[in-house]
Length: 313
Image (cartoon, helix red, strand yellow):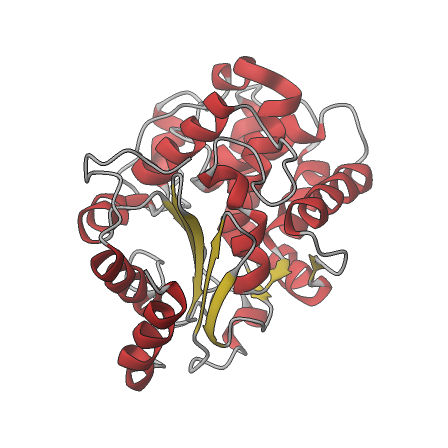
């Protein structure tokens, strides 16, 4: 199978639709991004990365960062993390506060904002916010084999200045005793985490460990246990696109995680990690063109977690 040709063909077929969807505007820094940007990167176990379009331009990965934060929080906390955050789809928007109040401060899953704030809190542990951020960057640079990975300070500042809803969620969590660190310390890390700036190529390479049972197939380095990698993939499939998760699973059939910066990270267990980027979003906050690209790649490759074929691990 010529994956490079599939990626290039998919990009060409959708190029005329660049600019479709609505870019996120509630974070001012994201509203300034060119809506016509469109990139695809597909990384495989042999270290090859098939790219098309703006695959090497960095963008704000936003909620995709929650996947990496979850992996690192599980490494620090183990199964006790699940005492503080659930593993069920929410059926609500990513920043809903109603469900959190009704369910006594235990978020439904680690990918909605309230759940991600709890996950970030546990990842911080007894360290300072700056130490936690440095640890996150160190791990991402190792996973992506790229020392230049960092976060966008302007986006982080924009997140903080407009983060009233996230502050409300964090104070709700604190009121129910769900946070171990001060609210502003947790949010300091959370806003910088969401402001990570990565290209499609960097993102796909960084996530390969999730497609290969927790081990980077290029370096052989284990990033997390096989069981945790599989559980993270399960949560991506069930909860990775909030109240659009079912539709994404139906149309694409890969575990995936979206971000309001227009990126989507998808994993095909045993085969590849794929990152797409197009800033225009659908009503649920998932990249409109990115989801179409992944659907086409699934169709052209025949890959699906529902196909019944054994993965090539």
